[in-house]
Length: 205
Image 1 (cartoon, rainbow, N blue to C red):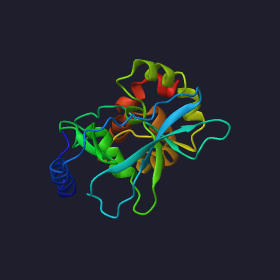
Image 2: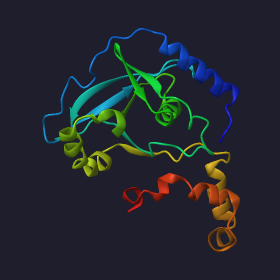
Image 3: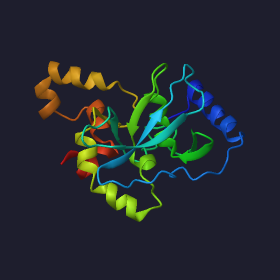
Image 4: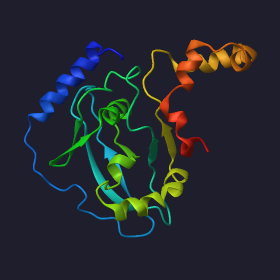
């Protein structure tokens, strides 16, 4: 398993601090999705501090006739322990208005990476934007998946943290194309292609 760096330790301390704050127990999906082209989006609140509490708010929008500018996230719900210092840690609190919504440590790690210092970021994230307790809503949103990803301004693919820089892989591909594609497996290549995300057929089909 990956080790916690001093920075990650500070994040963990921030998590404990966030859990000590009192929140109202409010159902966060109080604005149901009704229209056939409606989805829910998460706006991630910016922060100049890398370890401050994750904060966001949800809104229901329509993809028709013109979709708002948002980014759709594609990831696996649980990271591989050897690549993530958060893989075996407890769920993380996300502040949604006056509510606390617990998210996976994997997703919290992603949001910390995506959070901007100055600008809010509008995202579609299935684990949050779909009411996972509602079979009706889940079925409705699954049928919308194609539109959700194709109409996004950008799709962010999260493969997980790594001990290597991803750009090193592509630099090697250009410099040593034949060896990269047909030669003996390189450790850096194995690490990249062994990520769980690539095993999800619906992502790469």
